[in-house]
Amino acid sequence: MCRAREIVVTRPRAGLLDALASSWALLAGFGILMLGDGLQGTLLPVRAGLAGFSATLTGLVMSVFYVGFLLGSLATPWLTVRVGHVRVFAAFAAISSTAILVHALFVTVPVWIAMRLVTGFCFAGLYIVAESWLNDRASNETRGSLLSLYMLVTYLGVGGGQLLLNLAPPEEYPLFILTSILISIAVVPLLLSAGSTPAHRDSVRLSLLQLYRITPLGVVSMFVVGLVTATFFALGPVYAQRTGLDIRDISYFMTAAVIGILVLQAPLGILSDRFDRRIVLTTISLLTAVAAAACVPAAAYSLPVLFAAVAVLGGLAFPLYSICIAYANDHLDPSQMIAASGALVLTGGIGAIVGPVLIAALMDRYGDAALFWSIAVAHGLLGLFALLRMLRRPPVPLAKQGPSTLTAVHPSGSAIDATQYYAREEYADEQAKGREGE
Image (tube, rainbow, N blue to C red; front, top):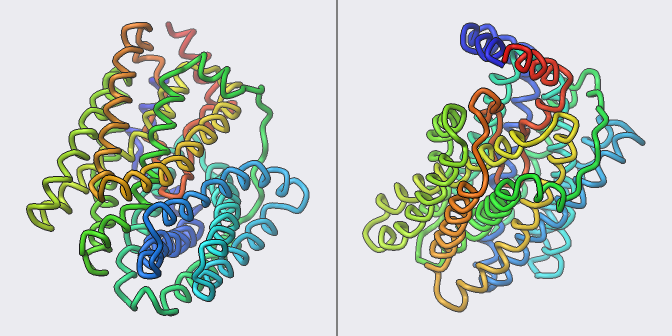
């Protein structure tokens, strides 16, 4: 493991250039796709508010996306085996591009629920296909830089999508049409850069209950991260709109969280690689609770202070995904990691489905500030649970911790995660060499 890390440190530029040379078109296409995804993720809650949807109904509509996402995650591997990666990607992109236009034509709860379900199903396939291609192209020397670039492009796209909200009134058609155009255009460079399809590797089976017995903190933390991430991106625009912010300020409000992620993702990942991950996870969870609670008085003070508080909240809360994945992997054998990835995605997906509906109901019942108070409570409880786990289990030696900086949560629930790296034969060889060195 030490020898592999030295390669990453001593040859960063070569790795970055190799990653760009092999995958620049794929990354460009994915960035365009994220522009469309970021735009529709904020456009739909704002349009729902203008149409008179309650926070509860808006939360329900937005959370259905994650039901579709889970179904798509289950169906996409089967579909790719039957018809191939290229056809699956093209079909899902076409359906997603159409679904956003249906939202504009029929502003009713049943139609929007159906379209969000379809969109979630399709985007799961788009992410899985694109990310498997990207990961398959990486070597041990370029994987870290390539995945870091992927997350940078992802959040630049999502952040840029928030700002596109200012181009036209959200109650009119142009923004829906622009989202459809962006999703359609994204297909071109992604398909042209596809090349050979990735190889699939076998993995042992691992149920969610089995994974919980192996790493309770890993499972619980993934549930909280999924809940908080989905809730903020689904209800953040609703909160901003209901507190009187105009379209420009709503876009700035959501962009502030993305900026926080871009600033803190790498430093927090590095900390979790150098110290006991449980200490880092506990500290970040408790700080996130404080940051969420601080957003309430910040909103009453001034907009710049609110934006700064939201940036801190986003920068602390969302990078926890990578630390949770890495912590879980520290307790798994390489043969278990692909199955564990599926179980962790399921756990985060359950949180993503429950969060927007539950917290939207709390917002309707107790006021808009319930958004931030709920996030504070969720992360406060996670921090306490992590403290309890530290008393019941010894830490994993630092020499045996795998890298955590390869992952970050995507606002739609997808990410390239380190389990794909850990499950490869190269990682098993490195682990064997590390044990021999000990």
